[in-house]
Image: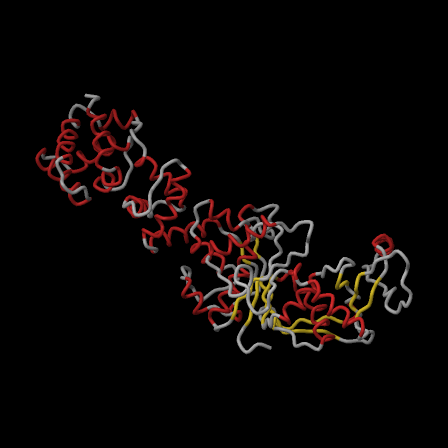
Length: 476
């Protein structure tokens, strides 16, 4: 067994990166980072009908977007390459042949049709089907038939058990297990076989995966025993439920797709923070930075209770990161959403961080922030006639004109200078600042709601703000 922790995430590339998979990857990644270990990405691509290059890319893209980086695996290589199961078929065949030679596995020639008939008969008799061991001691090789390789369960009574880091001690009787299929006739390993061979050869010290894999652990432990290998430790993670309290599934829950959240304008920092709290906690801490995750995470703090999806909590966390991450960092991500709306914001454009600062108290997603920014980027404004009738009057337009002349003369277009103009005009007219700011706000935004007037004019930019003021003044 390796002297440093070695953990892995082993997805099947048959669809997008699922939130549950992302949590498994995150927990393993954090455990490796905290304890100076190695995080391995292994691709279990043996479902040849459903595995696709597009799905592989979607999984890799999802991990990269979340910032979950692997030490060994695709694009990284490493001492235990290859990291794709379909490239390791000779290894599985060799170990299967070894077990057959030792009498611990055997070739089974039963056809699928025969097995279906026996299973149907068992159901008719009201009992669970368990392979009868028809080929356990078979010496002849039926002509024209291919063979799978089955594991030979010990014939004596016994118990297989393990101490799960999350669930505690779990046991199962030998009699509850059957001679399960290890290797298909075409040489493709089944899950319980392939993952054991790979985990041992890749020196995995701890296997963390969802609770749905608990029952798979028992046949795997029997295989470790037969091969004389020390098994890793196991941690089976609680389920993630949708808001409807059903298991979060690709079929029913769009939020199961990690990259759907990226498209919806959720920050990866917020999604990571949300996901880690689905089964793990650190006191009452809600907002947990990546650095804190790496300092605090341990499987001993993972609970067994299912986590429940809470979209409001996710958006709340997203808004917290809007307020705490550097505005320039958020602005680079906001640019993508503005680009989708036809407005290009070049890197380094000061308006990007300005938009973030202006809207981060109200926007919950980058989608919402982009929608709030668009009116400041397009040319011209559509006036709300009700607001215009109330605020762009014969009494207020002269004040708007004074503001227009004063801001046009400014050498520095910044919030303090712009606010000072509003204050000066209101003082000269002996009216409250709102009597000046609100008509100007309606003139440049078309309605009565916006950030502070100086900030509003800053976001608009000098040329566009003057054009909109002129358009309002032309109504007189």
